[in-house]
Image 1 (tube, one colour):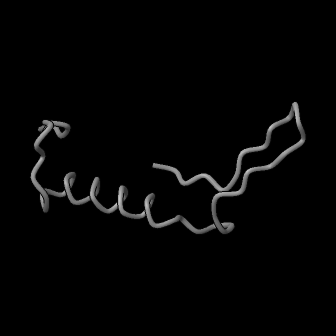
Image 2 (spheres, helix red, strand yellow):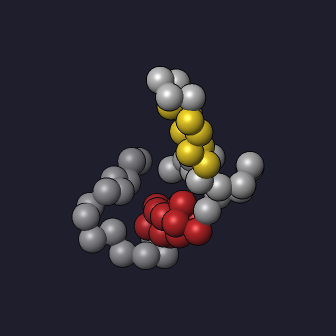
Image 3 (cartoon, one colour):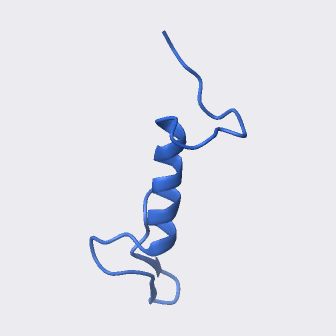
Length: 54
């Protein structure tokens, strides 16, 4: 999960800014924390995303 700071439209020269430089927004942070909790077994993996490799 990588937060996006902005998107530049090269055809129009417009920039669409989504967040502060170097900081993840609240949605990216929530997704990251949820995914890490699933990976570490702190949250249930209801979609079977995690496979244990021995």
